[in-house]
Amino acid sequence: RFRRIKYCLVVLIVSLLVKLLSFSVLVPSGAFGLVWNSLNAILDMLIGIFLLKDDPLFARAHACLQRCCEQCQGGVRCLCAWVFCCTLTAMFGVLPLGNSDIELILAFILLLADPSKTNDKIKWGVEVKSGAWY
Figure 1 (cartoon, helix red, strand yellow):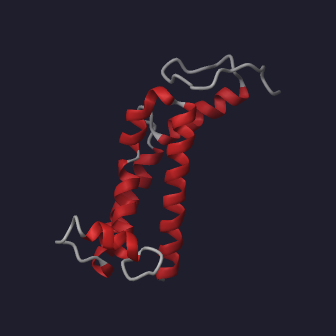
Figure 2: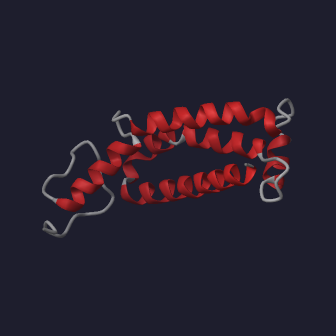
C-alpha cells in the first residue's frame, strides 16, 4: 500500500514542479496567483513527506523538515490528514474559480484551438502568432 502512496507522492511532486515551471513561462504576470493556487498541493506534498518518513527516497527530506517541525513525528498518523487534504485539493482543483487550474487549462486549450478567442483576464507570456489549427 505504501508503494501506491509513494507513487502518488512522486507524481504529485513532479506535477507540481511542471505546473510551476510551465505556468511561470506561459503566464508570468500571474505568479502570485499561481503560487497561491499551488499551496494546497504544497501542503499535500509536505504531509506526504511526513507520511513516508521511513522511505529511503523521502528520509532526507523528512529529516530536513523535522528540524523545523519537531511536534509532528510523521508516519502512519499522517495518513488521514493526507487523504483529507488530497481530497480537498482535488475538489478545489476542478472548481471553475478565478485562475484555478481547470480555468487556466481550458483557457489555454481554447487559445490553441482559436487564437482570436483570447481571454482578457489572463496575460499570456507567449505572443500568439498563428491562426486557428482547423
